[in-house]
Length: 112
Length: 111
Image (cartoon, rainbow over all chains, first blue to last red; front, side, top):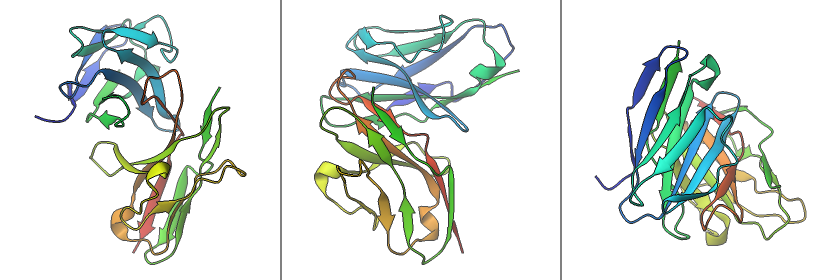
């Protein structure tokens, strides 16, 4: 497909478990962004990748959150020891140098 | 640090009435503002950007640097305008496309 894809679309997990969320950006897009979307908090920036490096990790809420990007393409957001407050929709977006961000459909994470 | 404020979490208007979604920003650099929209069960998508000076789906937004605002307006609301709207500000440090988003306004158009 031509757009940003994310998997899984829904994830239900138990408190304390680790989860991995995947983002496949648009082919050729060098920049990749992760956001968290929750009621009342809007769209919170988490981390930004340029290529495989992350110049801005300032939005990661705690050290339980980490992300990596390999081959300048796929990115994985990992949340360790999940907590109920981690429940949200996690959005990924990619862009190509000034052409604006294109968003994926999101992964809805529910922590029981 | 940059900031985007959308003071209304929820805005409900009747079909055919004018709509104004408020957005204020603070940024030390030269601002570039955007509006994004998310319809129910769809992904977030760009609605318009101030540098384009365009009207999309009847919506317009004017950057007012004096008031540091970028309010989104439409003269006659339609039911299909019901959605979540986010104002966003481009900032340096996030690459060529780094954005800071407001918390969003849920627009409901009543029939």
